[in-house]
Image (cartoon, rainbow over all chains, first blue to last red; front, side, top):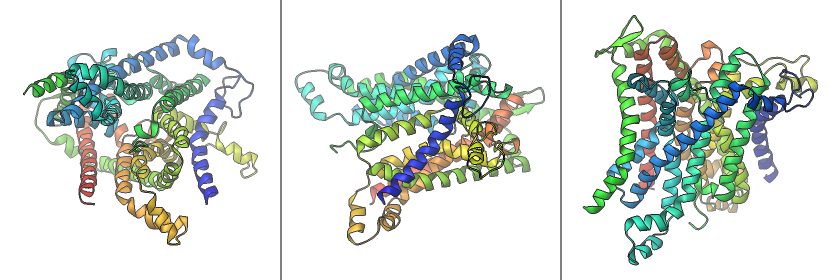
Amino acid sequence: MRALAGIFMGLIGLVLAAPLAVVAGISLNQRKMMLFPPQGLSFQWYGELFRDEGWRNAMLNSLSLALCAALFATSIALPIAYAVWRWNSRFARALHAMGSTPFILPPVITALGFLVFWTMSGFYGSFGAVVISHGIFLVTLPLITVSLGFAGIDPAYTEAAATLGADDRTVFRTVVLPMVLPYVVSGFVFAFVISLNEYIISYMVAGFTVETLPIKVFNSIRYGYTPVMAAVSVVFILVALVAFGLVGRFGDLPRLLGAWAPKD
Amino acid sequence: MRAYGRSTLVLAYPALVLGMFLLVPFGIMAALSVFRRVPAGTFEPAMVPDNYLNLLTPFFLDRIGFTLGLSAAVAVVCVALGFPFTYLLTRLPRRRQVPWLVFLLAVLALSEVIVGFAWSVLLSRTAGLSNLLVWLGLLSQPESWAPGLTAMMLGLCYLAFPYTVLVLYPSLSRLDPSYLEAARTLGASPLRGFFGVIVPVSRPAILATLVMVFVFALGAYVLPQLLGRPQHWTLAVHITDQALSRSNVPAAAAMSITLLLASLALVLVTAALGNRRKEQP
C-alpha cells in the first residue's frame, strides 16, 4: 500500500516535471532548432537573453515591475492585516475582504477594469499604471501571509510590553513588527514571483509599451520558435524554485499554506 | 474613541488606494456595460441593456456553454487526482512535505504563457512525447498532438492541479488522523478507509475546492490560444478580443460583469455554506 502511494505521487510529480524537463532540454540545442533530446550542448541561448537588447529590456522591465508591485502590495496589506488583528473593526474586515477579491476572480475581469480606468485617466500604457494594477491584484498574497503572522503572536508578549509602559507604536516597532517580519517577507516573495509571471493584466494595461518577459515570449511564439524562449522559461522555473525554496528553508511553509503549526 | 481614531489613521492609506484603484475601475466597468456603442468604435453614456442581451445570441451562448463545460471538466479531473494526492502529501512528515510544496508553488506560479509553450513543445512532432512512443516501438512516426481540445485540457489541468492541491491542503492537513485509525482498527483496508471515511468527512472541502478550481479555470486566457483552436476560445479570450481587437468596450464590460457576478456568487455561496457547517458541527 505504501509503495502504491509512492508510485502515485511519483507519477504525478513526473507529469508535473515533464514539460519543464523537455523545455530545459531544448534550451540547450546548439542550433536554432526545437529538438529533444538536444543536439549538441550549448548555453548560448542563455547568453542571448542578456546580449539581445529586446530580451534584456524585457527582463529589466519584468524585474523592476515585480519589485515595485510586490512592495506596493505589501505596503497595502500590512496596515490592513494589523488593523484586523489589533481592532478587528468592521471597516478593517471590509478592506480585508476587498483586498482578497481580485485574486480569486478570473484575472481578465480585473484586467478589463484597469484597461478602462487607465484609458480614461490618461495613464494607459505607462509603467506606473502596470505597477499599481499588479500591486492591487496581488494584495491578497501578503494579506494572507501577514494575517497568519499576526495570528501567531502570543498575546503575552504584547501585554508584557504594554504593562511595562510601551505605547501602541512602540509595541508595534519593538515586538510586533520583528515577529511578523518573516511573514511580510514571504508575502513579498509570493507577490514578486506571481507579478514576474503575470500576463493578462500587463498586456491589457501596457501590452504595447511596457514589454515584460511573458508578453515578449507570447509575442515571439506568434513569430516562430527561438530557443531563447526555452531559456527564459528555464530562468522562470529556477527563479520560482529558488524563491519558494528560500521561503521553505527559512519559513514554515506548511503553516503558511494553511496547516496548523506543530504546537497547535 | 482614541483607538477608533488610530484605526482610521492606519487604514486611511489602504482604504484610499483600494477605493481609488479597485472600486473605481470596477465601477467604471459596470457603467460602461450599459453604455451604448457607437459605430466609430467608441461609446456614449446611456442606460441600455443591449450589451447584456447580446450575450444571449447563439454565438455567445455557445461560447458561455463551452467555457462552463470546460472549466467543470477541469475541476472534476483536478479534484479527482488532487484529492488522493493531497491526502497522501499531508500524511508525510512535515520535513518531506516542504520540497513538494516548493515544487507545487513553483509550477503554480509559472506564467500561463510558459505553461502553454512548454506543453506545445511536449506535444510537438520534433521534441514531443510521440518521439518517446516511436522509440518504444508503439508508434511508427512522430506526430504533432497540439493544438487541439485534448492538448488544451491537458494544459488547463496542469495549470489548475497545483492550485487544487493548495486549496485542499489546509483542510486535509488538519484532518484528525484518528478517523483512519479507527477504520483500520475495525478492520477496513487502507483503500476502504480512504473511500469510506476520509472522502465522506471531506465532502465540504471537496465541494468548495470544485468551485474554486472551476472559477480558476474560467480565467484561462493564454492556453486556449496556444493549445486550442479558435473554436476552443473561452470567454476570457473573447472579452479581450472584444475590447482590444474589435474596440467594443461596452460588450467586453458586459461579459466581464456577467463573469464577475457569476464567479462571486459561486465563491460567496460556497464560503457561506462552509461557515454554516463550521458553526453547527
